Image 1 (cartoon, rainbow over the protein chains, first blue to last red):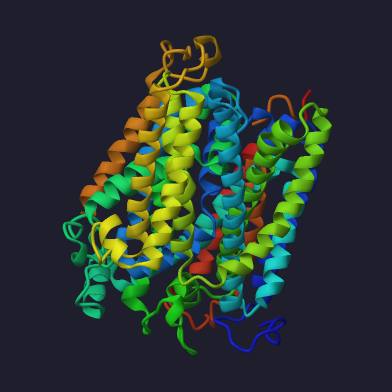
Image 2 (image 1 turned 90 degrees about the horizontal axis):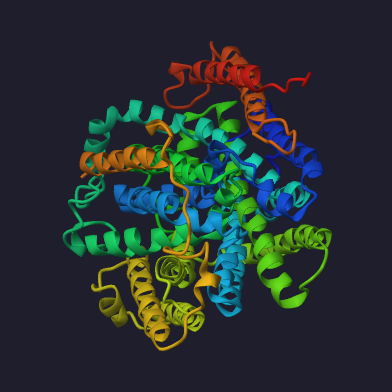
Length: 567
Length: 71
């Protein structure tokens, strides 16, 4: 075995062999080479920021999903599934599938036909600069924070699993991402996301396979978990949501259905520019509609590699994991469950592949955030507010520089993330500030021609301030949890769900109220932006198997079956 | 995948990486057959069949999506 890195930190989960190190090194080399290869194709603004709008449905769909498969999924959700059980799978099912299908079938025509480059870009066309500017600034702020979380999470994994110095890991991985995104723009980010998609599956899928063999199948797994934790129910997705105290999350089904399913998931999957940007890069409308639908099938399967390892950890790990805030020497936290499972089952070679998969997942998230930030800063803040009429090459240069600068800001926020007890609670809180009200603003803009520019701006502002206000009040005074989250037993994730619900409702009420009292844009300015003023191409002579709506129906059916199976 | 830009398809790079990684893992699994590592279920020799699967899939992707000279 090669103990090259043994001297860096005295304690770690595994020792890497030569083949493991080779696998990791080859990955870094590959992504850099691909980035440099693609640089020659990313010369114009449309190439750099939107990959030339040439992606097929499969490429756009897999990168759409992979951009979301970052550290949060691989590390944080495995930890959340250890903490909350199969309830964590809701963030992959009701918390994603209906929203992805809604994006593909209902919203994508408006995004794609408007030829916008970003979600704030759509807001500018629909509502004007005020709403667009607010969205762009809040998105830019959030995405850089998210990038920092990705970096921190990856560095933590490398420290636990490999014994690498946390600061070394942050700098090496972030600079690698910065180089290949600054070189090839969205082309590079998408190519590497597709690559990372395959690595994540091949690197992580062995854990649930071997884990289920060890546990004795699903029934054996359930029996072992019940034996280890007789006072908790970790293996039912819906039947324990009738009362807050019946499940490990302190959640009621209304929070899951309305807070998560109707607001947060819709807000994220339909308006988060990081994922929508990948679909905007599709080569035509049909590919743009199909991409999120293709992604939804794989999203439904992601719990196999993320949620199931957490459940297997509950069943087979000899030690009980603890929250990050309660960590004592010799113990491991919830977020360590996936690396612990990796160390349990994977020897030389497979360990390197598993570590590379984790690294790939983190770097996909980081690259996605950085490329999205570069686009939103350049096209939605810099060009409309700072320098309006520069040549295209100037904006491409700004995009490259912004990528590097955004990266360094992310490194700073990575150190901020170190102080939080749970990565997932931190991210969900951020989401709920900005995403939930944004969904209300965008959806009303697409569906209701009467919505006015002032209504859109004030609704978005009111919703965002409501989310921040509720969050702060619940943190400062715990009695407020019972008011806003409907139960004093509601924990972090549950609180965020209700916070999102209320902020979206405030956004909608304010948008509608102000719009009814102000003057809407003339119809000529709403063409291509609003239902009723947008000619959407019909698919009359397309075979059924080529129609996006057919595959959306198949995905929805599978989703329902999963809910019944894991009731 | 590209119409305006003649870019090597991303699937070719996927195949290349799967092939290289699969070969390394398969070789490692064969080398440690008699002395498997101290992991749970090491007797199943997962590196051999998992690495083999990656080699087969990687080879298939490379064959189907390899760059071809336009005539």
